[in-house]
Length: 267
Image 1 (cartoon, rainbow, N blue to C red):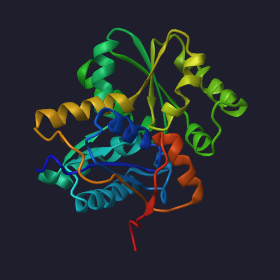
Image 2 (cartoon, rainbow, N blue to C red):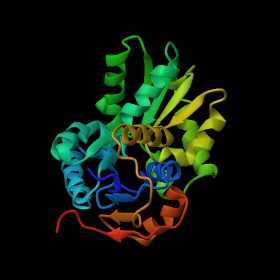
Image 3 (tube, rainbow, N blue to C red):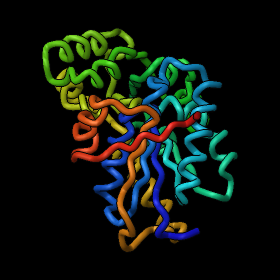
């Protein structure tokens, strides 16, 4: 496997750009190929079978781009399709998701504490976080809450205003999140509202996966001798459906303006 091959990152839309941004910041010599499945967002309300079908098609695109690693930068896809994608690409690429690194971090840092989780309907109903945590620590306390309105709110640009303040506050006042010591932000959109969430959660750590996944990726690449020591080409950003609004949102998610290229999954 070529260490100068790109790192593939995909999400149901452009929320995974928060993970891509963290990777770009930590590993500037790595070339990125990003795929946002904007034609089928949000994944949070899709069936597992549908998410698996989309994920396999996207994996085909990233493998055709020669990616050495595929990062599933979506909690819904990580819960529904990680094992399938991992088996599908086999020796062609390493596959990592956003859930496992988060679980390792949380169990190590918050053992014996009460932890909350917010995410899409697919992520919460799958109970992937709960099942994987219990496999490692049967006594770990996790309280989960579906926060279905947050993704569309963020994508519509309602951030740091009265609407976002009220919606976030309504969710965080839920009894399921009482007396927690930490809150897992179980969606790659949520880092954009992390400061608002933290304003409600005094002395409670809000944990987003972007930096944790980037560090996890660095460790895997280093261990496998796949860490690039020099950028070789430009980053690429694909979406399965293009609109001007997505183009405008990319600066908010990635931190700089990028050019989106439309790439249909099905002709």
